[in-house]
Image (cartoon, rainbow, N blue to C red; front, top):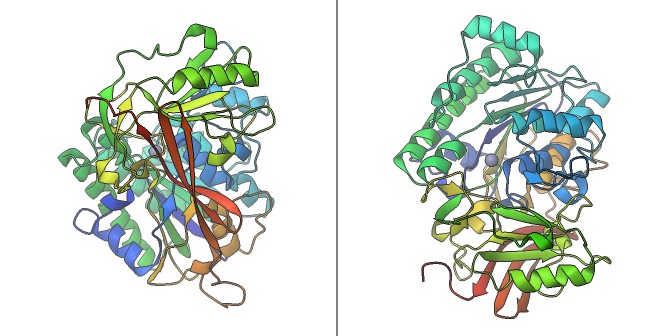
Length: 478
Ligand SMILES: [Zn+2]
């Protein structure tokens, strides 16, 4: 076991206010007893593959370039680039156009450390947990088999544990199977310096049944029971020095489905419509972008709007992409979220509802946008590297996680743009323990009758998005 060795446990789609002692006693106690980041946030768009990539590179989408779950990639201009699909990620990786930043897997290899992934997440998300794992000979075990999993590892684990159970919602059988693989195979065989353990729940169950449904509560309880098994094993002296727990985003309620995703006039260009939507224009001149924004802000489905001029400043009526740290060359020319309820007064995640494009029933969980319920995540840590019983209100977000882990390993953080959260680390206060300066900013743009707001934190000079919302004309159904 090397200094700072870490198991990163992920609860997909777990909104912070849902991690309660009655539903998730093991997690709630872990948060209470350890370093607990009470103002932790996802990234924008708050979609899983964007989130996992932001974690594993320690950078926001503006730097790593996986700008959305689905977007138009220059390698494939005729059809949307779908990050859920292994083959498409492989194509972009082979062309050197998947990521612009170094991953945790590459950092571990460079420094002679080992890394493993165990995942019940999607093929695409599992790939992005360690995008060059196979080339680096770092073990990956997923519920998808090869080529997502390392072939011989898949053979060994299925020979020992039996066939991988079928997917379900709740995905309890697969989560338990993966926990067995983590404890019985991965740690005994590899003793990895860095290990990612990703549970696909409560996300998939919450999408289908709703954030607070009985089914989602069962999914949360199952994840928590398996986390309890991991904690008991760890407290018996097994595994890594430190455990970090996180969720990649929250969820809000999908209240109203678009009648069609064909909502953008064809003469504007190509569009990818979802919780986060992008328009990729044939003529992305500043003037044409302004025309698109003028049209968008008058549409009933339109939430927050993003567009930058050639010089990086905002197009009138929009926020610039820099405001959400998603200003990348592969990004959309104009982006927008679908309208959600205005929770500007309370920022209460329980009150958040949105229009959605598809993929869930009415009342199912949704994420991708900027509501507090989508951005509010779980993040906590225990082990010798971290302070105990330390609730930290210093704002942080997904790109801060890997720089913090690298710091506990005494490895360089160069090339990451997240911030090592030193205020939560145990040890000498001269080196660690000093909280950074934090400034709160409220940005607003009014155009025609469309008003949009973005609340940011500026931590040591770098922006983290707290949440965003719109007001003006009423939401749907009112
Ligand atoms: Zn997710």
